Structures are given as structure tokens and as C-alpha cells.
Image (cartoon, rainbow, N blue to C red; front, side):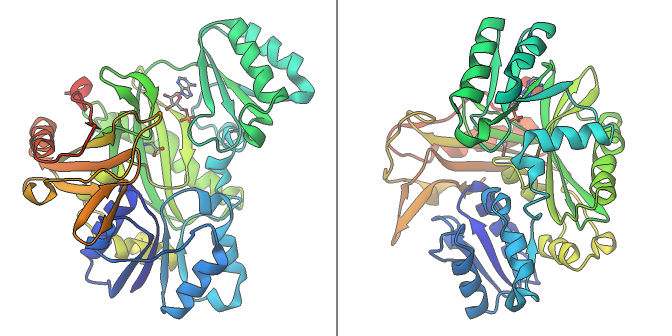
Length: 424
Ligand code: AMP
Ligand code: GLY
């Protein structure tokens, strides 16, 4: 297969690394990619939201499979663009349509879907500027803390968790009346706060059948002990110890099956990944959010634990034959620790030269935000490297990643030293 992967983060390096090990691969291109994806394929300088440019590249390079890493092109309708274009009819594309991508792109859409299909999730109501007063009344009925969610994509910043009623009302007003998150907050979902531990589950589906991938737990806060600002993710582990077979059975029966069946019932064809952001409340799974893509940094532990051929699964997705494919997991644990730029997720400097990558022997270093000029690799983002290791258990996987990190240096590098500690 001749494959084009869209994206440039650690998730895409992990997907590219996995596909590069497939016997079905003829040539792999990554747009725009980073210094890590360059080691496993050819980087192409394309704006992935410019569908015309993607089309030209696909036709000029005889691409037969396009894999979409991030949500933005999906939410903007890249799959619909491919399906509507006569020249692209024969090109397979992995990802849901614009309508289906609302599972991630609209909190209200996702919540209505869950309500309709009896999928466990926090109780909620949705408000616009036309019923602000009812929003205040709903807040009055809830117990603190209050969870306010901008309906649309808001670069991961659209969820507010507030302790006081006054603050919650003020923020609701600012989201609806002052467009605090732009258009994304023209609708706001207010929901009940759920107390529990979060985890991420993933399936790949062709719209009829599905295959479950290894679960993972990510660490979103910048500081140790889950303190400080939210980030794109500071590390991840897989498997998740509390996700025992009983719990994972509940996830499959109460969440995954009703979701895949519900999409079909609602006539929402869905091909690609579904990411279930879950919370374990007294051993019962609740859905916090859906994403229409893989997680980052979860992919950096999920792909290493997937033994099966990823391109074989993708072929199953685009030809509607996923049920005939086989998924096997690596029994080993995997852990990844993110090295980030000092200051992230606030202001940080880029362009720092990275030393020591060649000295790492016990880990796979997935590049998240890097660039290269000849052999010199430099930082090019907030999250810079995801250092992934295998181990016979999580402890040993984490030890390996932390040992490898000691061999890598760049100016003002920061990482959390407590990844996985809460679940060990
Ligand atoms: P979301 O973008 O919906 O995933 O929300 C971002 C984060 O807010 C989640 O990862 C949770 O940590 C937290 N969160 C969202 N909804 C709730 C809820 N109903 N109860 C508790 N925490 C929540
Ligand atoms: N790690 C969470 C996400 O990818 O949204």
C-alpha cells in the first residue's frame, strides 16, 4: 500500500512507526511530519486542512490509503471531500465524516447521542444565549463543583470546572454572551461532576464491526501529583491496572457496543478510531467524552502494545472487512514519559538543539514537536519527545523510560517524575 498519514505529533510518529513495520507497506508519506517521522517515511510539506493540496499529492503519488491523525481535518470534512470527488473514489481514507466527527466536535451532539442510546454519562443540559436564565436555574439545582463545556472545539481549553455557583454563572454568561471561546461557546453543556479515575479506551471500526485496542491512562496536568495547568498530555501507561476484565467487560457492553450499534441505528456511517474518554465511578464506566481520533500520548503506548498489523486493520476498515481481521496485544506493559519545553503549556522557547537521542537503547523515542536540519534535531513545540518503553510490568517500563530520559538533553527540558505512580 502507498500511504499518506496526516499530522505531525507524537501520535503520528507512533502510527507511522507501526505502519512502517507492516509487510503490506510499499511507501509511507507523512504530512507535514516531524524529525521522527522522517526516520520511518518521507515527510511532505502540506497544509493538511487544504484538501485540494492533499488531493493533488494523493493523485500525483498514487496513494491508495490516507490516514488522518488529528481531529481538525475530520471536523472540517476531509472524508466528505474525498467521498464526493470522482478522482478520489478509489482512495481509502481512515476517519469519520464531518457529521460523525461531531461526536468530538460538538459536546451537545455527543451528549444527545449518549442519552438516546442509554450510554452512561453525566446528567446534563445544553444552553444558548436565548435561555441563559434557565442555565442559571440549572446551576442552582446542581451540587458543586460545576462542569461547563463549550460545545465546539476549543483547543482543549473549553471545559471549566468551578467550585462556586457565582463563578459558574459568571463563566456561563461569558461563554454565551461574550463568546469566551468564540463560536465554540455559542452553546454550553452544563453537567453533573463525576468523581473517579479516568482512562482512555479505543476501538477501530468499519461501521459494522469493531476491534478493541489496548486501554491507556494519560496524565494531563503539567505538575506532579496532577497539579497545575492542563496540557496535551505528559505521559501515559498501558495496561491500566484498575481496568480489570470485569471493568473492561462493562466498558464493552455498556459503552462500546451501544456506541457502535447506535451509530449504525442513527445512520451515521463511521470508519476509523473511536476514543472513549471514560471515568471509573465506583467500578462503573461513564463516558466523559468521545474523540474521533486516537489519543496523544496514549497512541505512544497503544501502538507498541498492538501486535497485529495496523495496515491490515486499516484495509479492513476501508473495505468493510474488519470482522475478518485479527487483533492481538503484546502482553508486556508500555509507558511513555513526555519531555516538554520549559514554560509549557504557557509561553516556551523553540529551536533548542536536542542531544543524546542516539544514546537511547532501551526505549523508543517518539517525536512530538521536533524539526531537523540535516542530522541536527531541534525542539519545535511544547511537547517535544515521548519516551516509550516496554517492561514486564509498568514499574520496569517506567524505570526504562526514566533511565532513557537521563541520556537526552535540551535546554530547559521538563518532564513529570510521577507518571504511573497513582496506579502502581
Ligand atoms: P473533556 O474535554 O470533555 O474531556 O473534559 C476535559 C476534562 O475535564 C476531562 O478529562 C475531565 O478530567 C474533566 N471532566 C469533564 N467532564 C467531567 C465531569 N462530568 N465530571 C468530572 N470531570 C469532568
Ligand atoms: N490524551 C488526550 C487526548 O488525546 O485528547
